[in-house]
Image (cartoon, rainbow, N blue to C red; front, side, top):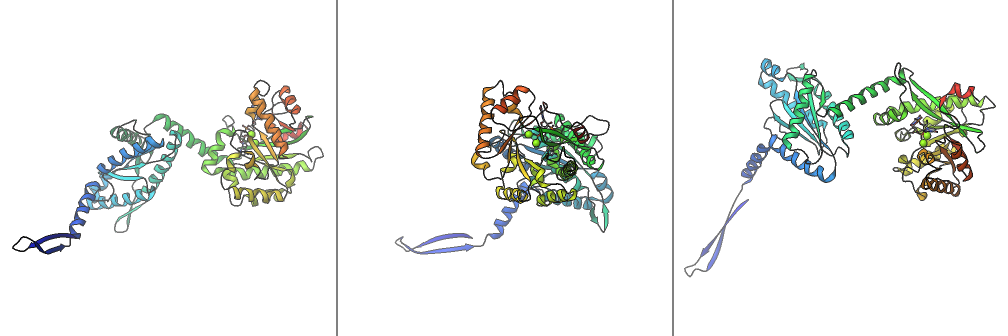
Length: 467
Ligand code: C2E
Ligand code: MG
Ligand code: MG
């Protein structure tokens, strides 16, 4: 409402009345709002225009400077848009742009921005992509691939004829205000040209090192997907011994042998398998092979008493049916659950504590035991540890390495052993390579050992033949 108030006075100039006039200005407000919106948005698609985009990029750079989190700018260009416009007319072209805008918006989070630069060029800005360039690149690529896939779905533009269009995407990753907005957009533009040059319908990064790293990762991922199906995974076993060097068990360690290339160490592919979810299938395969091994060992008096330690990664353990999967693997081979030991890492204990404890207890009930791997490298406190039904602590290799030279490492290991004894946890040392290390550990009360001194990880056949 617009209100106007007038005063009415008598001949002596004293106020006698007020007269108030109201008018409805809803329409004016609405059109002001509309003008403001139009000044910042693209009339056709309703997306932010270049002006609002620049504003948001500036804000994102300032926010990134404070938070230390990376952002990414994606420039998206519809391949051969001009041909469509020229042959089918501008109405059809407009329809396509509106649909592209809708799909873009659906692909991003609310806090991200999708804008139209003009013509058939769109920009998506992603924020809060994490604190290091590599993971920012990975996330930006994931969104870009999702957009690329969405935009290449058929469009219904006029009548019920379907049209297929693809898009090329250029990405630059940024942190804080180290580069100006213009430079950032220019870099994404250069990346876009690389994508067009590479044949379109493709995603490219401005940064060559990032592109190379992502390409390698992509081929590793593709290789790993095939590895299971093609039987390229192997399970090796490494002996574990007691103070008198008698064999008490083994740890199962995964190997990947792609045909015609060198063996890939687990440290190089397990993190990737975790991120992509492939670890779930791989972990099941490992469990199956380990249980089959336990079954074979049960038939031989020399191996009947051995335990088998199996590494379980966080993502695998968090599967709802993890407990059932373990039980199923044991049952499938008729393996003794009391001989199976699952190695967990501290990172797994940090959240959903109750759920983790429940799963561990369910498996403890049938006899399966748990060992805490790489102990000492994380943050687990004594009080915290007590909440989980572990049977064993596995002292990380990094402490064992210098145990005879570095008094600090030696003190840490002695403390871990003492603590294990107090909590009635057995302690196993991993990475024992020298006689002096073994002697020192025995002297201080460690009861189980694993390391090259007693044997390297080898195929089951080699392990069994060497008994
Ligand atoms: P981890 O569980 O801590 O395994 C011990 C690692 O130390 C193994 O490396 C083993 O080969 C190595 N090692 C053993 N003794 C010695 C020694 O005396 N000196 C030295 N320098 N190294 C020794 P590997 O086989 O490369 O495995 C690396 C990591 O990959 C494992 O660390 C584990 O976290 C993961 N991993 C291996 N197999 C699996 C699996 O089946 N599932 C999952 N989720 N992770 C696995
Ligand atoms: Mg382990
Ligand atoms: Mg370890």
